[in-house]
Image 1 (cartoon, rainbow, N blue to C red):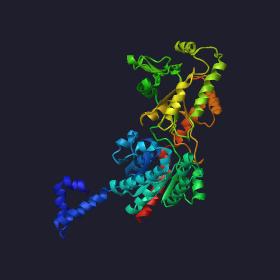
Image 2 (cartoon, rainbow, N blue to C red):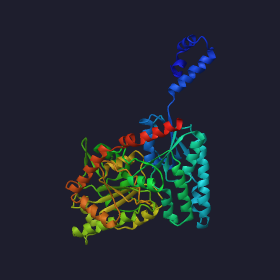
Image 3 (cartoon, helix red, strand yellow):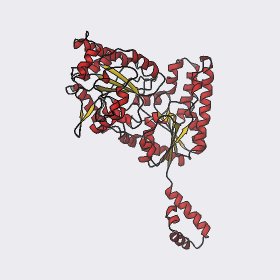
Length: 492
């Protein structure tokens, strides 16, 4: 009998006391309370992200799996900023603890102060993180920490695991020292010290997960760390969007999609006047009676998710867009046509062999404004760009509504894969050169939307892969056994 039933049923409580003649009423009550507490007690895990929780999808998926599949109470410690998935916010067994961000004004200090900031920032972060892990959250059975960043995260979590008697698991997304080397150079002493901390404290973990077999091999051969591969896979809320879901999403995003900042481009063709608030019509869909239909001369949607950092060269996509625009104009003999004439023909419903392309670029990061200015200076006839930040729930829907996903990620270590989830049903490609990108765009979208066999093959392959390998099954097979193994060792 648990504590709750005893509190709501006084008669049952008195009956239990009568069965314990050798104990006082007070002692028996305490004993039954402890037994009830043991019955109700669940294991606990703490997910640690020294970054924006809402921009850390893999760690959010870990939290959901720890709660759903491992039946653990879960605390997430990280920074605020972006809203996490609603499944995280609504889950009764998941609690979020938000730390304060490093002051932004210190990031803009002159170069002469950079060594001082490089030393002070991790020290402050270490103290704040250690305070949260040791005093703000309940003692967990296991800490699961994202790496990178390695300093001071791994140090703080290891110290907390010592102090609280908890197990300690690292999920290796990349190597922190290689990311630091992008800005400071491989020969920097800071990079060497960073690598020493990352390697030393990485070896102290009770268990490790990683994202690729190449990283698993590197950790084993050169770091002395045994890691289990857990591939990135989309969870259940990443799926091909239905026509109704697409229409509702485009209605919500229509103002952002059809009204760029002072730029008139091909994405505005055929768009209704948003001031009329005619929510039965979008750039891509329209209502015919009670039915939703896709417009035949709609633009093709290309989505790219980026953190706007040097390890994702967005310039490749801009060059490819210019190439696509010029080559299509040459093929269709439109070199002498003005944009206005071409757009007027599109307005009247003309469909060509190659469609308009609308690139929707999602994400936040330091280089965003620089590239937005470059986009504003482009003079394109058939290509348009939109940059935006979507909610955690709209992002999967956009991926499920896109015709193609493009990833521009280049690995600083050469061992990780991009943690950008392309929904099953949205074909996706990884690109390294502008010429390759342009070639693929022309090959995939020739005859869009009806006669584009290559794109259909790519989409069908994504559907097949997505249906056979989901996050939950990957996590159940690879992460769950490791987590319970290190927990059992820590309590034995």
